[in-house]
Length: 416
Image (cartoon, rainbow, N blue to C red; front, top):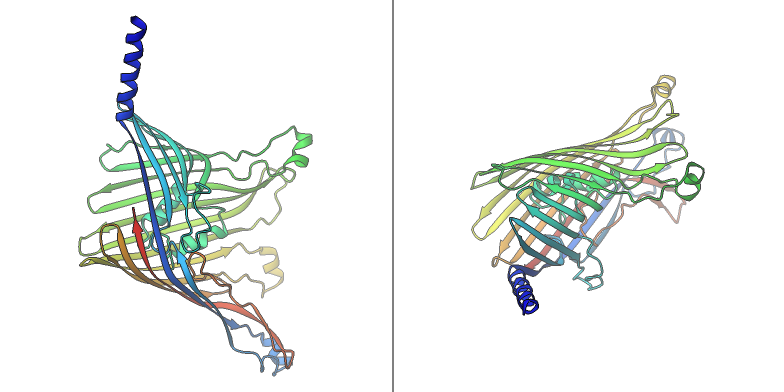
């Protein structure tokens, strides 16, 4: 009799737990006609012109490359996901989130990976502990304070530029994250540590088995305040791109950024600034000259509600600077590195047909200087800049430098 009562109690408890659990299927299907056109200009050398005035006579002053096609994820990233939560009682809850990228333009990629997010969490009055693959804290400011959400042709120039210094700046795998509770009067924050999961061995084996013994490690955090129309946050993180045990160096990217938005109702303003520094750091035997490369970038943006739609616009600029060797500069007065820089202007309109379906249009223009090579292409619609050209009749050849890029998206987004 007692065993029966225990079994019935267990079944009742299981039924209560099941009733307090939920699983949701969700997703976004986004498709667009997208295009990009890149222009490169001929680089002329004064010394070559002095010795041969006809050196560039038969070469075009500019070259263009372009591509047009059906794209996906130009307004919101296409995805298919499953999320669920279970109430554990006593203020505790457990949850999971599995989110897969999909390429609905060709159907080639479906739920084959959960590369967008794959986490399991435990939440309570203490906040949330989250394990798995998730956004980096340093990426959140990029996307939250960008009117285009770092998606499509209007993607912030800062986001286009950061991967040159920081590997995989969007997400981190093998991570442990902690999020502050939501009852702090508008203050919010998170910290994350991502394991590199590299093989380590005794000193006499490390170089032979895996010299990259620290590559892939990431740690970072974000802290902000959101109350009413104001939202402001600061973030910092360090990514170990690569390491070499034998020479004792780590190639590290350090990302500091701050972003803010203010909603006036008739208009919402956005702003962000980022500095990303990439440098080889040595534990011993550091070279006399160890240059670092820095990127400074900012964005100013706005969204304006217009009836059932919204106008979006942003302006961004980035500039790279690499340290100069003072000894070489002393011996060679003409020694210098060009500091690449670029400007981007993006404008778009979204028309909401319903809460879940929207039509959108975006156009972006990028101007490159000093060797920068950023393109306004989005998703799978990209094109390289032409870099060289040879005249087949006269045999003249020349080098070309990226100059401008124009990209656009015309599409539809449906969420479920």
